[in-house]
Length: 414
Image (cartoon, rainbow, N blue to C red; front, top):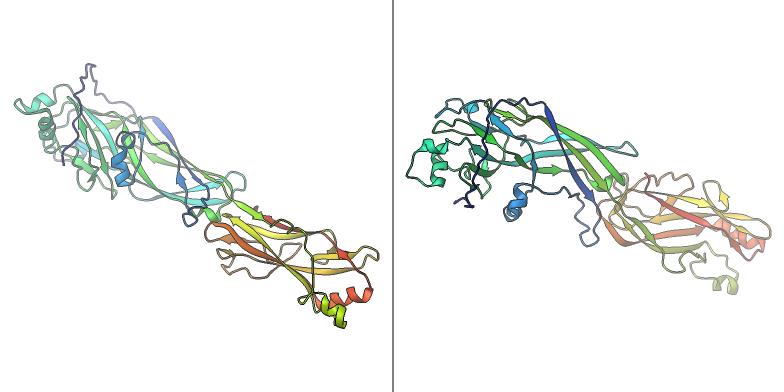
């Protein structure tokens, strides 16, 4: 693999490699959003919306192939002294160990206090090393600039130190080399100097990361926030060895996960006016006097849902824990049983299908329905029924019309 050659950059400023106390702390935001997509109902995951910077902004094609993206941090490091040729202790040279193992953090809903778990790991890192002015000269004349960089470390920095892996691209200049390595495991990746290096500096730190986010279908709408802090320095979470002193002692990642759920119910035109009739119609009663066994109406609706929800009733006329219809003249009332059948993809709290589930004023039995995937405009049914005993009362009363308002509630505030 050949590194990408770029124009040689002339560095005219004097570099001072000194011991700088690491007392500062960096912060960066990691943002993600869940917004259901009707064209991809099976893809129920957060979309990472964190702006990309650093390596992946410079080499987007490489990162697209590797399915990674990076963030650049103004985290620098400088050597406290020369790096000796063929140093026996890898910690006395150029090395990196980053938090490549999964770490967990808790994110909390700002309004409800609900908590969920997020996992994060670093999948890669990179920087630009800058040599003191005389480092390349120590390699000796007669070789190209690229070869001088290779000889200084025995191999080009486009080739990652084991167990890190190559990213595919590197760039170099007179005294600098840009690199980015993948981190499949959490272990030290060190380069051994083959010549004395009077001074070395890393001018920034890029990192790529992976996220494991919770199932958004089981989360409430709103924003969840949480933080994870990494220590920086020798023997810490982000470790650049004993000779390289970082500019900051900690890095805090602030996570912000936004959940934008959909819960929409559509009733066909005229569907808000429900007329209860016998199964065989009124003709049998009118012709033979045979009383109907029940009055009913099944009303279809369409539902789009990505969130948990509950259901209940509100009634103009009340009959115990359900609604009633009333005869205007006498005030006589009879109860109306209301139930719901939900489409495939929506289940109750136990994961069971919802078929003719009774709806009650106090919401008991319908406290939680949840999607297994984004349900986009699927058909459900509301079932309205007056039982046989109540039908007989209605007919015996001689009344002609019973009516009343029944409000069915779909509530996403679970």
